[in-house]
Length: 177
Image 1: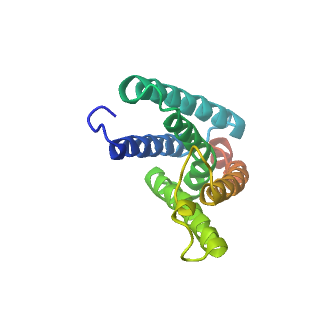
Image 2 (image 1 turned 135 degrees about the vertical axis):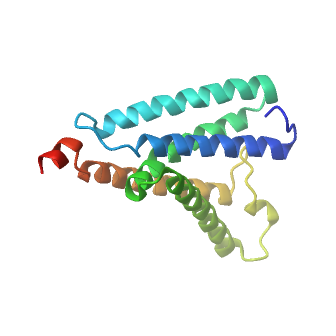
């Protein structure tokens, strides 16, 4: 945010925030599950940690980058949703935080690719250029399809993550067996 005062620098700052949120979520679900831990307890703790990270990022963004750039704060807030839904599921399934972060980013990239395919199906290959951009202040078909795809991915991942969390035996059950 401080050293790279261009549009690309701002994008890098948002990508770094995304990566750290994903990694925080992955490490939260990497450790063995204790006997008293529940899905809702872990999700509540992770939500609080991610919200505090977003608040800190937002304050730094408003002070150091642009006090009028509310779009970046909205994008950063949206990063918390896949951090809470997709990353815990993949972390439980894969068991390695870094791999869960990478696969989560790939899955989100696929939702953008599907949105691009939808735009191509609707407008054809020679469709207008503005329909393949991401204007966060004026949503179009590309952005709307991306949001819908991401909501579907997050909802399915959250449900599967809760199921995977409950199916992992706790330490007490493993020691008794």
